[in-house]
Amino acid sequence: MTNSEKIWQALSNARVSKVAYNPCNKLNMVMQQVPDDIEVLNITKESAGLSLCFGRSLAGKRSAMFIQNTGLGNLITELYTLQKLYQVALPIFVSWRGHYQEPIEAQVIFGGKVESLLRAIDVDYTICEKSNDLQDLDQSIEDCFSQNKIKVYLLSPQLWEENIPDFHVFGHPALNAIHNSTAGYEGKPSLNRKGAIDVIMNSINDDDIVLSQIGFPSKEVYNSKDRDLNFYLLGALGAATEVGIGLALEKPDQHIYVIDGDGAFFFNPNQLLDLAVYKPENLTVICLDNGSWGSTGNQPTLSSSGMNLSAVASALGIDNKGMTDSAGELTALIDNKPLFLHYFIKAGNDKSGIEIPLHAIEIKQRFMNAISD
Image 1 (spheres, rainbow, N blue to C red):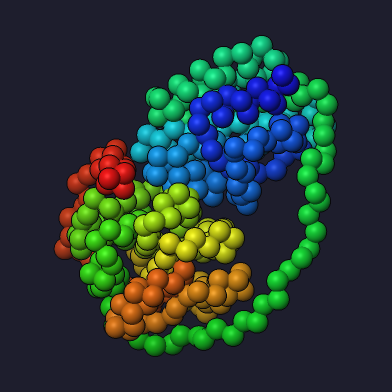
Image 2: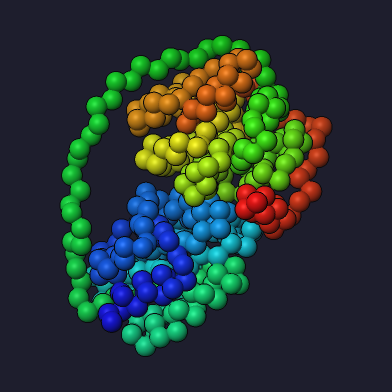
């Protein structure tokens, strides 16, 4: 059995059904051996992949990631405010660039600090340089899941017998034709975010799932209508829609509403890219657009200067969408369950509600219990 096959067998034995993958030529040997029972999610950004995996975990599914070590720096925030905060397991297989016969100078300077970085952020890791280092991989991955922790496996190029530069078909430009004519907006919204959230929470069905973005959106959802089927994100700006996608793909029989904001999409536009790629039929992302960074003091976002997120969504091929500032139309659109709902609101935060009194683990556990019924 090759070293690549040992890794995949260990993941299969641990009931990992999907892996998030960001390309690195030092991972080509292992990615050439993906078994039929594991699906690869090709990601555009490491933090986006981690958020997709987190969403799958809420549905009780097991995931793993394959990235290169420079990508570790791109997911530290999500790693802490999703996986660590909510205590959700994730094995991360990392190509250890800059460690062994590395020709690229920029990789060497980072590769030499990877162990120090992982120790600094309190992430357990194992160095895999030779075949013997994979001997206990089955138990190590199972321990990762049973202990609800993150575990990084540093894969040295020494593991592979040879480098296979091209393990799949080459990519090539093949663009969809896009005819984009999206209305602008210069109206006066009638509701603030709390008012819009009240409308949303009174319009959804009892068995619908609601997942809310960090800061005031989650606080206001809690104060509007706390439910076991609400999942409150307490960190990781720009991750809510990614988490919603990952969850929706694994819970096709329940409709999921993500309450997000314009700032989150400007902060992480990869969310719209993945929304356009996966397009779960049971997902509605509601972008509450106040042209402001609501949770940090209502400083202007790019939508205050003309950037039209609905037009961006259209350009990406998201046709099932709606745009309005009317409370009545908001209710009607929620009933129609579009993929992307762009609702305009007044800036300002609700100051009367209390902070969410639940700890992250409590939020996760009651939610997972509710969706498993």
